[in-house]
Image (cartoon, rainbow, N blue to C red; front, side, top):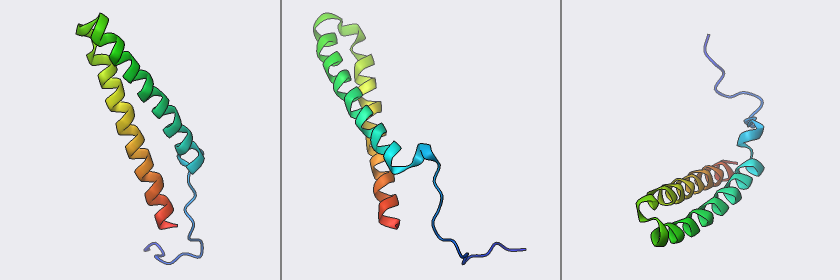
Length: 80
């Protein structure tokens, strides 16, 4: 039996951890982590140059996550 391609209900139910509110909270938190990592890069470049890779990696990953979640929210709002 094939799935009905035209169901009566059209709105997809998203779990709470993937809701728009949770995504925006994650974006705000990751922006704070990004600025924290930038300040860590400034400190590490002066005092401990061999450990400067860690805040750089943290800044890159937090910025990457902000972009991914922002585009997910944007695409979801575009489809609605």
